[in-house]
Length: 272
Image (cartoon, rainbow, N blue to C red; front, side, top):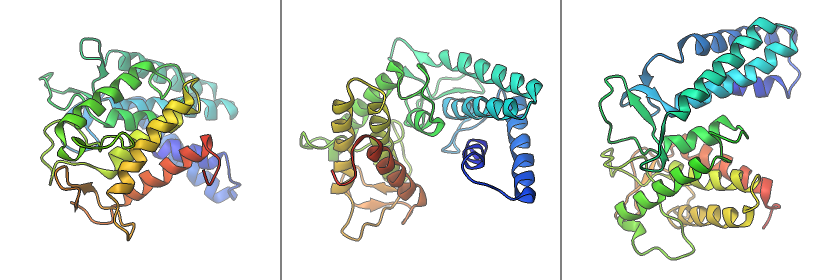
């Protein structure tokens, strides 16, 4: 994620020579580390289980794709070729995360190869929006990614009491995975906002754009309903009562809101 961010920053601002050299050194270290270690087991973004994780692999592939372009522009073709090959190998590995029987991308393969109850996980949706790719697979364009989001919607629609009597104008409040026991176990602002952002980003590239916009707006309406007049966003809003829980003023919740509304403005003029 740092490499993706630095490459975007590097391409949009003019840096003085000293800072540019420091950024370039950091980029080289991050890209080469990702290339060398992507096959290694790691912990997921929730810091709970060790294995190969869809999220980690997807953003690593995106970093290497962007890094390949960067190395190529600098005439460093050996590094560019290595990054492209690494990215393709990762994406091929991710093809194997698809559960045809259950119609979703599984979020993980544990180091022990034991089954996990967390295979259906919102982190896969975060992978699509954080990688920011527009490829046919493993992106917001991927029908299998849309199927994964549909399975997550159905899961939390059934699991969270605050979703049981929601009106047609509201999307389901979203969580992380089934059986979450952290504080109230969700719902989470950042998960619900990620679902909305996914819809807006997909709308920009789909003939069904208007339907996707309406779906994204339904998720945003749920966030609005459970946001207090102060506008403060905690980590969770309780799945039974809607009352804010867990970490107060969570930076990720605000960041998710900012990136979601930015994505919406790409498909809807400001003020609508």
